[in-house]
Length: 270
Image (tube, rainbow, N blue to C red; front, side, top):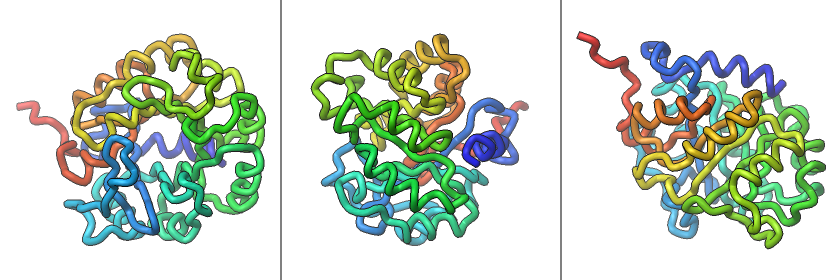
């Protein structure tokens, strides 16, 4: 169902009152969970993440935060990073279910690193309609030879996350470090992925603005049929405009929503 859900979810724009602002740009709220609670992600320094203090939610439980984001944004597709699973724990299916009770669909990064873990996850996910996307993250890969197989396992739910740290590939695989970010993105697309997240962790949660627009533009020009989502650094409408101009279809946003720095109201045209 994932591609149909993607198309349907793109009808949910920034909000009902401001949909005309970014008709081709979708805001995708981000929820980072660690040890069962939602945390505030800052620059990829996961050992320092603390439970989120949100202006929208009364506590940091996944269901409460998801409900608050749904109410505030009207968005129906969320990106969920299961940081405990990324660190090696089992996926937090209880948290996924709690978020799904809000009616949201999920793109889930559970740190799938190899074909075996991807198969296990997909077996569990097969009957769960709320899972729109299963993220295969560069950061988690253990071999450069697995990408095509991982795409085949996740099929049309598969999303490749081109993970960066300050513009450099974030990977443990030595052979992949020799590639440029553009080359790595091209490799993932040629392996069959039709949705890509371009995520610079150094920009996450620091209100520094977006840094991925040049790379997104290069990918969108070469592969116009691929759905590009950018993550890290979105603060306000100008950042969304910049990403949209670069060919992005969606933007991952967290801090700017919880801090209310991203206005969801249409601009004053008088």
